[in-house]
Image (cartoon, rainbow, N blue to C red; front, top):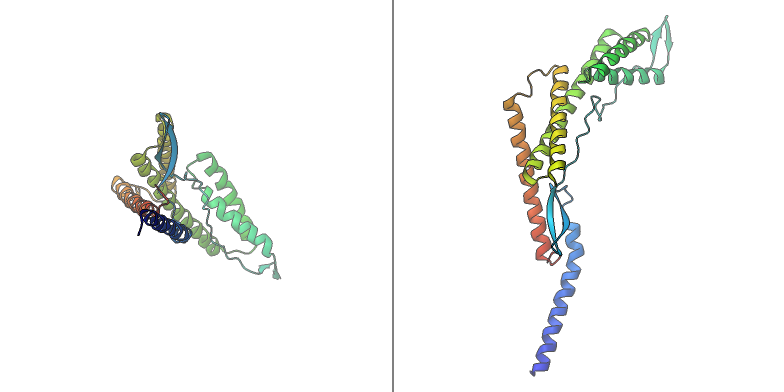
Length: 242
């Protein structure tokens, strides 16, 4: 085989390899797991060169004292009023939801909000009792609202500590921005601890408990980093990353 033929044969092999790689890339992209990465890669220009910097992928904790995943609250189809069966489904449903919401707000870390909500709870409780709800039904409603708020509080506290640990590991841009993020996380932690106390969880977030939660969040971050490493190696193996 002549030199020219060898070159043509090698060029044909290279082209076939590139075509095969191009066909695999769309399939590879479909197979990649769609999990949220702990970091995001940002292109930064420095001294005329482009490099990638890792930034923490933080979702700010939206802390409210009203749970965002409320369960549907059951209510009677009819009530007995002055000896008559009266169907007031829509009104009872509205008052039940309002009662549950304000019962949660009455445990707010914000004293003004809590006091106003306590007044509305007393009024709505009186109104619901007039509409035929027993004290036992109101007590059950309070227990459900309290349980839902406690669950939400624990979830938000874990998310906030995840952000704190991720920020400590990866950093958050400039010093001013980093300090602002740390202050925000510390304030949310303080509010969640106070909220937990108003929910009856006094001393729940002890130093030991907080350390335990922080270690668990570090494990989650480590798992995210391992996933990111595997994804990058996978992309590099198929030529997506040079």
